[in-house]
Amino acid sequence: NKEAFKGGFVHGNEDYRDQTKKGNGKHADFRSHYPTQLRIRKYPRGKFLKRNIKNLSDIWKENKLSIITVILEDGELKDHDNPVPFLMVSDLENGVEIRNKSGQIIRPRILPKNIVRDNGRALAFKGSVALTFTDVDLSIIFDEYKFKSVSIYLCMTSDADYLPEWFIKCM
Image (cartoon, rainbow, N blue to C red; front, side):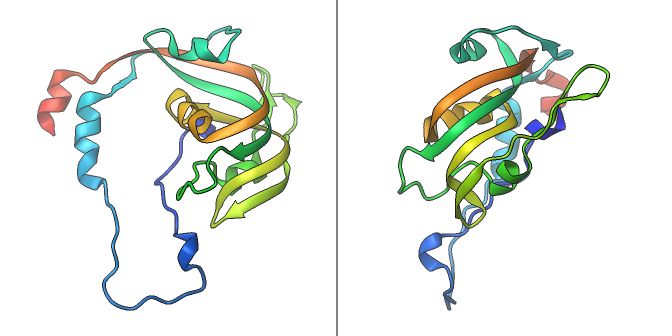
């Protein structure tokens, strides 16, 4: 499910908005961190299959990786001093359509209202939104945000394992 995957994580510092800074700046680049992550993380091994779960905590109980479509209502950062909020405004503005197996839309995009923005990131929103995440992203979101309610629409899981040794040796 392509909606679950995100690109790079970039965020400007709100404290310097509308200012031009001169001199040498600082940045953090994790490009060299990537090979380490390939070695130490588990990845999907096999097909993703639908899984019925009752509680959100069940997502992380087995040796599985998940892609989950959730409906979030009234979200807000737990810590308003968080320098890099995780939820992207563009995701909230687009949401996801929920479709059946034949591709028919059974629930159109649910979009929130009153998004509180910070340089492309969401600090809070009112209303509901349907979004799809990986289990890793969802755990970060639950660490950073509180919601009035969360309901699971769909959970797909795959067995998890480390990348093959032959692949790791090529890095």
